[in-house]
Image (cartoon, rainbow, N blue to C red; front, side, top):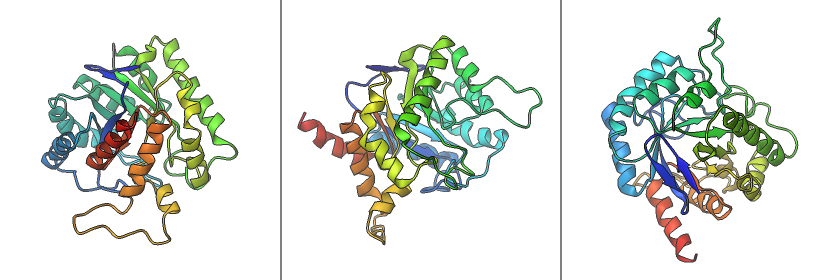
Length: 290
């Protein structure tokens, strides 16, 4: 299986690691660390040295309770970093839900659009909505697309989590979204699915999605898993999370790597992570027994 993107065809025969670069002041785990363009590009370079196969740039936090960011501000954070990142020789994903930002990113050379809204968002401030996310990616000749499932929206998603068995609901939503893109002429090889861990699901529901992730992989589309440092991991750790080490190790590091390995064992083609080096090492051990 391959994932076709703007400039690269990604071979998914072996799992790929997508390194997270948050160009935000308020992301849930590393907000404010990489707001400066030079700091963000150093982060990109370090993740590649650590073994990342792809990079995911995000300039707006979508953590629970996060407030929407004006498109102009998102673009002012994103584009200077993206301009440098597209020269690094790997696929560059842009984490955004705004059609205007998608278009600007693709015009600058981004390879993948990674959308928590699965291309559904429409700007309520516009009397006549601009081109939808679906239209933007469908008009592009080859960008990769990651469609994520989110219940409600970032401001409300954890106030009223989903009800019932989430697995068939998530599967139905994601496959419907993918088929809609295919109907617009988007090749199947461009589409990746993300169950949206933590986006409007309870802790039990998130782990149900991990336990039954193979249901999603049987859809015929590759799956991206984003468990890194999520609060559901903290919920199953001891009542007090271990402190960060003197070297700055995140207290959810071990749990994050474990979740990434379990996701790959259950068929995930890409894992989206903060701790790239540790995840790459763990995947090498897993690969050694295959």
